[in-house]
Amino acid sequence: MNPTADGVAAALDRAIRRLRSSLPEDRVLVHPDRLATYQSDGLLHYRIPPGVVVLPDTADEVRLAVRILSEERVPIVARGSGTGLSGGAVPVEGGAVIALSRLRRVLAVDLDSERVVVEPGVTNLEVSRAVAPTHVYPPDPSSQVVCSIGGNVAENSGGAHCFKYGFTTNYVLGLDVVLGDGQEVRLGGEELDRPGYDMVGAFVGSEGTLGVVTRVTLRVVPVPETFRTLVAYFDSTDHAGRAVSDIVAAGVVPGAIEMMDNLAIRACEAATGAGYPLDAGAALVVELDGPHEECEALFGRVTALCEANGATGIRVARDAAERDLIWKARKAAFAAMGRVSADYYVQDGVIPRTSLSEVLARIEELSGEYGLAVANVFHAGDGNLHPLVCYDGAVPGQAEAAAELAGRILAACVDAGGSITGEHGVGLDKRDAMPLMFGEADLDAFQRLRCAFDPDGRVNPGKVMPTPRLCGEVPGPYRRHPLEEAGVAERF
Ligand SMILES: Cc1cc2nc3c(=O)[nH]c(=O)nc-3n(C[C@H](O)[C@H](O)[C@H](O)COP(=O)(O)OP(=O)(O)OC[C@H]3O[C@@H](n4cnc5c(N)ncnc54)[C@H](O)[C@@H]3O)c2cc1C
Image (cartoon, rainbow, N blue to C red; front, side, top):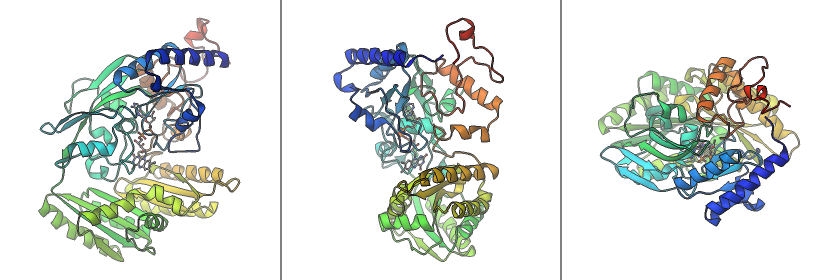
């Protein structure tokens, strides 16, 4: 079914009129200048202006807005803080954005049960602040100061400490979700393992395509007794990669194990002055946490393994301030690239940890072939690479070359037995890469799940799936859809 442009514009006008008469005035944005803020996420080269932005203040307002938009058949895209790096929150042209940034209340903190209930617009860091100083929310994306828990749930976000502690999906107990027709459902609850289908598991990582989250119940954990943090410097990422393999093979499970190559070190140093040597080929941040005696015993082993793999120097954090400084540099890595390159393209792929040297060598080869520098910053323990492809958008053709190079890096990850995304999601950016990993039958199973939640395809359409289909459409050679058979829809 392909409604005419006039029909779409008329539906949007009707929806805007109804939204304005049902919600306080400041909740509905239509002026082009104000809409411009919402036209892209952290991946700025995708820009689509929405037709309307709704800024609800409560879950009731979300329900009301979604119901009106659904009745008027206007597609909706949920948006948290807009830091996504796969174009997930990019609007549908002439559609609506529901921005959840006003829903930022911490609703309940129950430390005895190690649970916290928050609205989706609460930032990742605010969750940890709400349970400090005794507890912490472990998934810690580098964007944690600004990214929202709703966005983290949608992307199943990870971070430096997920190697030991697991990802967002390991911490979400329950969700209130407004479906595409405005109905509200509660998935999961307050316990770790509810009877029945694991609907929370299905929802986390669904990238805003199954509904809009309005309330999240999260698990938190006690703050470890001790932290021991070091940065080891190496001549090359190859040596640092071998140290990672040896540390993990020795049975040590660091709280975090992160790597930066020389270009990333130089960028981070320029941005933070954290004291990393500018001539190091690679820096490996290793953090142990847990009981004091355990950390002390393992720390010696980690240091010895770094030295055995040719570490040229080891810096040990003497206190909390130095630990913060070491992390500040690592967490600033993406933003810091602006110090060494006019523009950069963030790639996100996963490889088996054992293929680290091989894939990094391939990235270097590709970088030479395209004449574009690539910085590498990654969660080494998980094999989750973040190659940052540097380019200058003012030079004709460089942006396209950077995108092509980033795509070839992704193919190298898949060839090595890895994945097209670790934590940034598929969104708009990688939907065409889905067939690199999934066959028709796999994609069809995903589509059926999506249709079970959103049969009218109203929520974040055009994302994740490489070839969007109508719900109920049969995959394979073209066959007439039941709506076409009934004369309700036609194919163009
Ligand atoms: C500098 C920088 C560093 C980053 N580091 C990391 C990192 O270490 N690890 C990591 O995993 N990611 C990282 N990211 C990516 C990004 O921060 C995460 O994907 C984050 O979870 C997005 O949250 P957000 O609130 O900004 O979501 P948005 O960008 O607003 O939206 C992301 C997706 O979530 C959906 N969504 C948002 N809110 C809701 C809701 N309430 N209900 C349903 N769907 C919703 C949107 O539709 C969209 O598909 C980084 C990004 C930047 C810019």
